[in-house]
Structure formats: structure tokens, C-alpha cells
Amino acid sequence: MLLWVVIAWLVVVGGTTAWVGARGYTTYRRARVASGELQVQVGRLEAGGLATLAASTARLQEQMVVLEGTMQQLSRALAGLRVLLAAWSGATGPARWLIRLARR
Image 1 (spheres, rainbow, N blue to C red):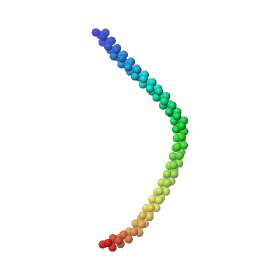
Image 2 (image 1 turned 180 degrees about the vertical axis):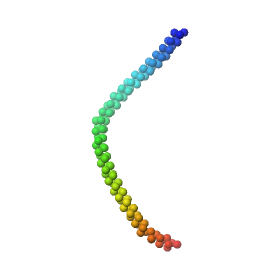
Image 3 (image 1 turned 180 degrees about the horizontal axis):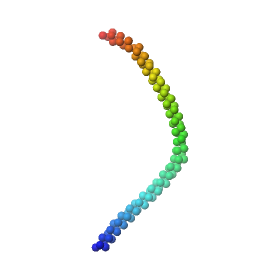
Image 4 (image 1 turned 45 degrees about the vertical axis):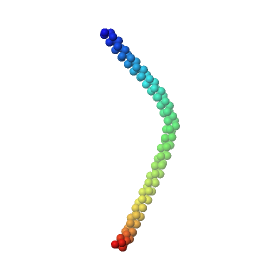
């Protein structure tokens, strides 16, 4: 009886170990293939994409300088508009008061 239990245990453990080993080997092969493909893609990026990254970064920095200058001009224009609106409100205030007075 004990012999049959030991044999059953060996079959179960041995079968499970063989199945896990086969799955592990399959995973290893897939990982090796994926790693090779990834290395090829990284090589392409280093050759093409990363070489243009420096130029793109420089162009972006130039555009940021232009944008900052434009934002400063816009800020000055808005300040001038605020002055104009304040002057307009000051000039039309008495006229509005007279219109309200005339409507009563």
C-alpha cells in the first residue's frame, strides 16, 4: 500500500514538475525572442529617433523663447487695454449718470 502511495506521489510531483519545466522553457524562449526584437528596435531608435531628438529639443527651446516674447507682448497689450477701458469708463460715467437722471 505504501508503495502505491509513493508511486502516486512521484507521478503527481514528477508530472507537475515536468509541466512547470515545459512552461518555464516556453516562457524562456518567448522572452529570448522578445528581447532580441527589443534590441533591434532600440538600435533603430538610437540610430534614427534619438539622433533627431537633440534637433527637436533645440527647435522646441527656440519656439519657447518666441512664445515667451509673444506672451510678454500680449501682457503689455492687455495692460494698455485695461488703461483704455478704465479711461473709457471714467469718461462715460458722467454721461451714464445724466442718462439715468433723464429717464426718471
